[in-house]
Image (cartoon, rainbow over the protein chains, first blue to last red):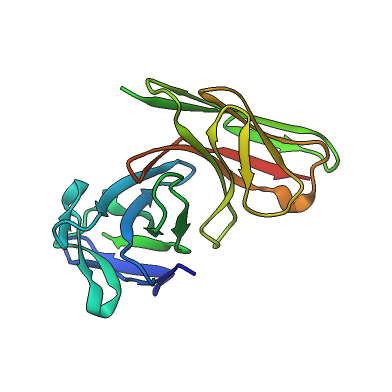
Length: 114
Length: 110
């Protein structure tokens, strides 16, 4: 069975410092991987996705993630945090094509310290 | 461009009352549609998905049901709400392994 683990439920960083949100997955097949962001009481917005092309994926708002098959990881990074980055972030894995049955991580709440 | 509408945005209902949440998608045909529930601190749980009119798959046994009366309309229902049905409900449609979400409906059952 597929699964995804977000290693930190809460991350706090100072404005202007780097962001690292960690995600590991388990799979017997090549997955598609996504990061979504959710601001309070809002729907989810796609930040970036990996679908077996380049292992370093660049997304919106300066975020990027690197797919490392040997480590079964897909960590999300940003060089310099901005106050507007404060939100909940979800790592998501998909192994099924057609019905897009995705498995969501439990989320990481990112707090930005002024 | 495609858009997804979900309503109502907020709902407070007593235990035992019925529920109807509606979702419509514009700008696409025959989308795959999904209902997710988000409980506090638990990520998103897939409740139902549909690949076409009248075709509903349920992921978890529960007090809820879903229907797809039209190509771009997806409805989440309950005949009698339970306290445990409280949560944030999200409708979504998919294209090429990417999900597009509505703004969500916050349901509080008292």
